[in-house]
Amino acid sequence: MRAGGLVSVPSAPDVRPRALARNTVFNLLGQGLPLLVALVAVPILLRELGAARFGVLGLVWMFVTIFGELGFGRAGTKYAAQALGSGRTDQIRKIVGVTLAAQLVLGFALGLLLVGLAGSLTGSALSIEENLVAPAKTSFLVLGAVTPALLLGSAFRGFLEAQQRFGVVNVIRFWTSTLNYLLPVVVVLNGGGLVPIVGVLMGLRVVGTLAFGLAARSMWASVPHGEDRGDLSVGDILSFGGWVTVSTVVSPILVYIDRFLLGALVSVAAVGVYTAPYEIVTRVLLVPAALASTLFPAVSALRGMDDPGAVARAAGRATGVIALLVTPVAAVCILGAGPMLRLWLGPETTPEMVTALRLLAPGVFMNALAFVPLSVLQGSGRADLTGRLHLAELPVHCVVAWWLVGAFGIAGAAGAWSLRTTADSVGLFWLARRVEATAS
Image (cartoon, helix red, strand yellow):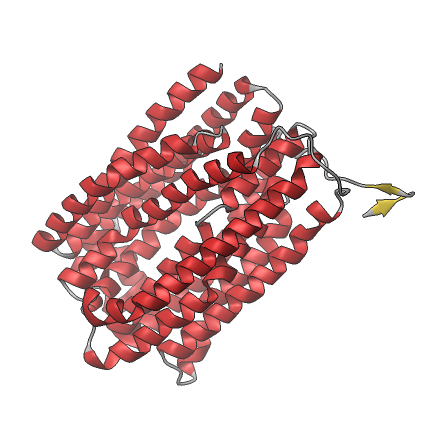
């Protein structure tokens, strides 16, 4: 972009408390308003598709969520925000190029892997009814074909977040998230089944990636060509992105292994029963996720400004706000689980759903708090610590979840999930405190 013959380069992001609060509100609106559609859509889909097909759709949604956060996109956000905060816009083109190339390579690799495993997933790994095997396999094949676009979309979104352009991010996110629930309802009410629903959803994700890409293009298009000053290497970006990838690969396994174990040890129908209370209670994480989305690039920018005291102050405020907002919601989910689910799902509510909601609520509270130290650690460039912590958690959680799901079914899955999020939150706070003490 040119003005008066001069190139207009991106300016440093606004990381003042008022700006962070405004951007958090943008995130809450962009992610929260579509939940009104979800509250109506999920009962319809559960009723029309049945528990087994809805369980497969829940797995597809799970993969979309995982792939949307996977890879080197967070590295692009971190280094772009840091470069803008320190005035090093000469580094922007390198950051963008390395990030997008890495995302494409990873996206194609994951897509091919998912395509290759589609038969095994639906044939032996999951307990699926015979008449559902073919549509489930086709759904995973379609998802695998679109995986590269999902990873590119996360990178483009990250570049916008690095500039604190959360207004633009959430206009796009609002429509994609709303249609993520609305379009399946339209399809199923017009006689469509699982495969048409997944096809429409994947098309929606491709459109979302294009929208994020067009919006983010101004960041690097306005930077003049030329060599950067060489103190940021490709290895720096890939190393950080590699450790973030470790966390983003392992974390979803930690979060969703309960669903896979339910599908393998009990049935896919049990996944459908478990998905409903899980979806309602984990929506509480909208608040910390909205705050963390602004905190992570802000921490990165503040590190570029060499102001470690500001990071500690921002993290303290964020923790207090999350605790204040999430505590009463978690309490209501525990004490009023039955009435809440019956109001939402009506006669589809089962005692297993009520028990799962009560067991999941404490874990959701601890998971909400964990967003802050995770943002501080990764925004400070210590993705290696979060990666190592999650690697250490993985074998322990898999064994515990396998035993609890095998012994207690749906209740065991919920209990294992909450135990793991509690341990994870404690570990992240301890690591963040150590890093902040060193930085100060």
